[in-house]
Length: 529
Image 1 (cartoon, helix red, strand yellow):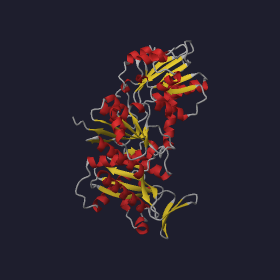
Image 2 (cartoon, one colour):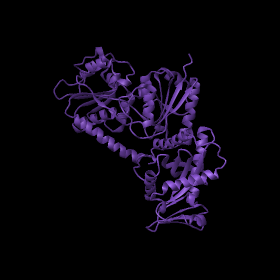
Image 3 (spheres, rainbow, N blue to C red):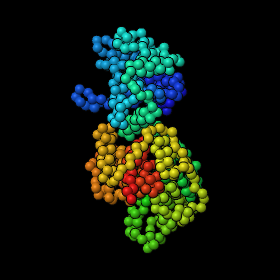
Image 4 (tube, helix red, strand yellow):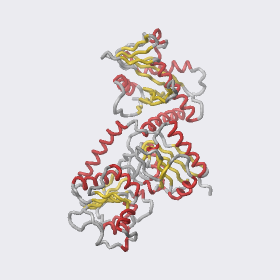
């Protein structure tokens, strides 16, 4: 069975593409990897950028790649320099170029992308095919399209003949590419596959997979709602989970339910002002029973920074307190926060934490004792945030997060860069941002830079050459957020550039690497001592 990317398709572009997807999956062996619906870009006569697409890219692990253009409908003809798909309802789709030319254009784009991405010549077979899964076409291609049967798929090939058909196409292009000297190596194949996964990741980062992601989010919501329902009768508990397991979202959704549905006075508290700001922005809750704030804001409202001087009997109390990122609080702060809860049988107190993200080296056992959490924590084990590649990378780079397991969403390997000094790092980031924004057209609001706390000030003092702010952006903003690692705990971004020293502490590194959903730059400055 072929290795398919994506492994699961939420919605196919056409019925003919769906038929070919499953035929390739079931008939090709695992010597082949197949990428479906890979976006690329071309320019029209006015030099404006327009979207294009390779319907399928088939990679033979020992030879190279073929781009495949698929045509559906009930027949495909060449009339008066136009190429026309006739549909069963009488509609037509008219193109100025043939399906074969479309496939060739895709092939040349990805061949060039490979060579410019890696700055090396491509070594291996490359070619194109056209597929007509719904009707016969092979007998017509030579006369009507000036092409050959060997690079054509039609309805007669769909029933257990596809692997032979694909092999013939690779052999055809191998004979045509007689100047190829080197075999398609495993390194070449890995580079090619990773490049195509990067295309997927960039498109996902721009919101291109929003419909698919919404369906996945619905599944995650259902799981989280079930967790909340299972715990609804518990008045005190702790929940522990590694990065990306959904702790903050469960905490937030519990707070919403308690405040907006049960009409209880609820406090959702964390150390991070940015995490609190993010959740406040999601819904307009200014006049509700829900208070979402960071610890500093809480102290500002009380009017006293020294918790030992606060008269706990005169300050506002809450019926429900939910603590997110509880590992950030000190034992003394834990004692104080517990005094904010009403002392009656109806009060509820919930704590969410991850001991592997303990950046301040607090004594977690003492913190939990002072929060008066006596039972063992419930544990979340599945990473829901990152692609499999990013989370496995984070675990390998830190030896943390081993108690949780990755989801199966595939993505590109993170880009690792080791640079000599901060000036090189700043130049590298400037160039990466330029490529993402100008070349890949990723909105700035989907890109964030996070920097280890110990080098943040010196990096920021040098400055970047793009608009940036130390602020959480929304989809309407046109700047790139730049944060300390400690400021960005609990948050995530489609694309993360994480900058740190070569010898950075593993818990900081673990937090930094696991902020990225789809695409990650792991940038380190070498230790020159």
